[in-house]
Image 1 (tube, rainbow, N blue to C red):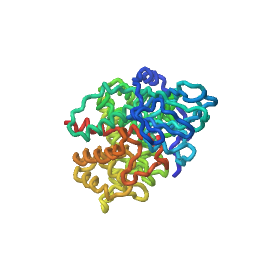
Image 2: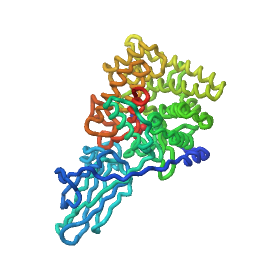
Image 3: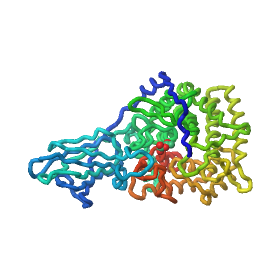
Image 4: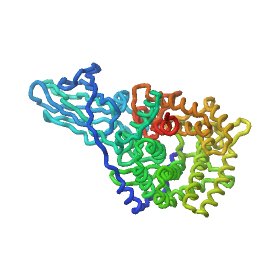
Length: 508
Ligand code: RAM
């Protein structure tokens, strides 16, 4: 498929007054010191790894006991004759143990191998301390001795990580829930969000370590119910508003380091999630001043989206990745885009009403009516389903977004959702599964929503993970949009929403 999601003649406009506000809200990171909780040498469990000696080819595995994001260090020493040559080590860090089996040399995925958490380093002097300068996201560390002189052996006398996050577990809002399964799901959601909360809401502390709007939307929701760091959401909204693409567009993703920069990717749905994120920020905080300042930026995203609408109110399809929605081979995004557009229009109208922008209110109402007509054109009466694109594709996504658009009577919404298991194109990511749960709740299918939380997100914890990953399709667990599971993030922002659902809908 043509990748035309990068804007042609891309230019960034910096709105320094917004950037100033955002920078004043830069969080102070909390740090905590953690040590390994378990270790294995060449696969054998060790009571204590300290002082165990390693020779040529030996591998020491350190398990820090939980997902951590931070800066790791090691204390090395030697045994035997005075070291007559440096030791060459390979250090791999993994969010899962499976990740340690992959290596840069054999990797064949379609994202660059430089995301793999792998280092090669020489140790010249013993004893010495090695602190890896790069921030890593991991639970496991494997140190393999690639080359060492036979005259001496290496020992690891200690290791620790300075874990960092903008969120402090001591500040989490209390949760009253008896169900142990829900408690476990909530804990994993909190840890996932905690790890992604750095100087901004990152999408994943391992990859991409930057801010994406779709992810921000779901992180912000969960954050309100958990850490409630509303200022961090405000900072991120101002960053997106302060670094805009051509014609005032909000980009899909921002780089934070080495300098603030909007990427050249534009996604139809992500730009509209700016409206949704601002709307919820206002609902949660009542911060009218921020709303008034960012309102025109949000409205601009609607104006740009409207250009894709034909005379009959339907968002035009295009053979490229202009709208994200979800990963998945051959998924047509038209119906989903239509639903997302309607959701954003409704929220924009609500914001116009809050600010008494009467002339905008009129325009938005008219647009909503047109877009609703457009959505109706996608309903196939014979099949009783929404179709998408020129090929009239049927997918889960189209039904879910048709329900979320809020135009259907509850019995039709329920029927659509009950038929999903028989449809092709099941969601591939927790991002889309989030919207599935939202749709179930909207259609009054509360038990189904609860059971989906337990089955879908619960399955991600079945292998001992304590955070939720980026991609997961239980019907096809080997699927990866990157052609390699090892490059995926096992702690991914858009997956943290069980904590939101549990805290907002299922607490005792
Ligand atoms: C990937 C990441 C990110 C997501 C984008 C669309 O790079 O998973 O979280 O928002 O895709």
